[in-house]
Image 1 (cartoon, one colour):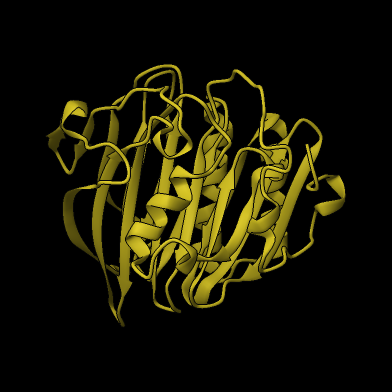
Image 2 (spheres, rainbow, N blue to C red; image 1 turned 90 degrees about the vertical axis):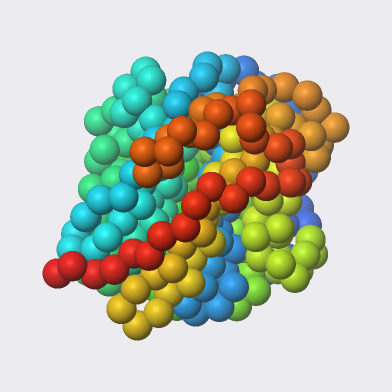
Length: 282
């Protein structure tokens, strides 16, 4: 599908790669795992992570705070049809997301590789190749991780087409990472707004990959010397920014607080869910 193919593996995408996304403008696929992760890199310490869940079935999205690899961490996951983490935000500016079919052992293995990367403090080609071998086993999916200073690793695979890259985002750049390499985008988020939260909403909402579009969860992070401030927002996509009307919102449990699916606004309006501070424990 378009320019991204097996030959794209290990290539660093051009800054204006967003201009060639969705080369044909149409696609036809009916699967439950068309999710998308977005990283908006404000500067070396601050960023916004967005995750859009696409699925034909409902699942309560659980957002919990935990201790992971010696850092306080916020994790978004679901348990319907098996455990699947969507987003992990960890102290120090670390954030990662994964998409693909509900294959529990692969999702847990990707989570473990993310933990290895955080412990080592660098996104490396070695670890991203490990992750990519797992994403390939999914047949369709993605894994993305962003660390301090804008260091990023991206793995996407779909039916023989791959994207695998390790690079550093510049201040003001974003990436949109769906479950198809042909629809990957990279550019400057100011094309939508100077507000990084609003830009993240539009980046996730204008990704053309995915039909059964449900919630978008957004995580604003401000990393300081010994802590990371975090604000969480939510919206219901439903394909509205693409002129579509498909998908339903999901209920959310945020730090034990129930957020009804019916209370979520339609994109591009967002609802503030809550805030917290993540620290380092080890």
